[in-house]
Every structure is written in C-alpha cells, then in structure tokens.
Image (cartoon, rainbow, N blue to C red; front, top):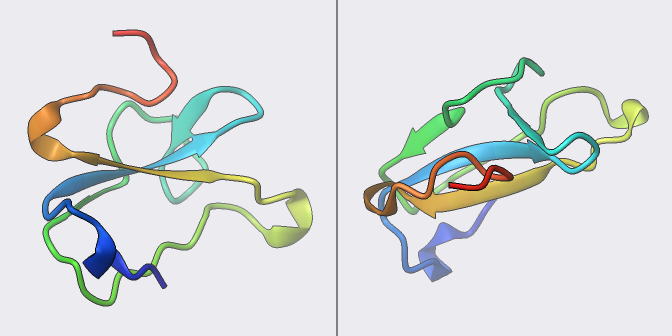
Length: 77
C-alpha cells in the first residue's frame, strides 16, 4: 500500500516500467502506451506489480501528474 498523502500530487497517471527492456506495461504484462491507472485520490492506494514474484518482479512504479503530460516513461519526448 502506498501512503500517497505525503505526495504533492492529487491527479496522476500510474505506469509499470520494466527496467529490463525499457517499456511500460499494463497489469497483465502487456506492453502499452497508456498508464495502467489514472488516480484521483490520495487514500488507500495499492499497487501490485504484474507477473509473479518468482519471475523477478523488479518493476518500477512511475507516478506523474496528469496535467504535466510527460509522455511514456522511458521514451524521449
């Protein structure tokens, strides 16, 4: 569970970034170009990385402000 109350963000995109291949994935391990979740809350947030722990779950959770429109993590804009 993430204590998002300490974040300055209120509305943000949530992405699963895979450092092994530099791509972003949805919660079912499919490569995507869209965040797996758009969040509008700071309370009770839980994020479970895709895949199984025994397969090496070294995913990076990326949270960015929706209004900033940063683009896809890992890609040059």
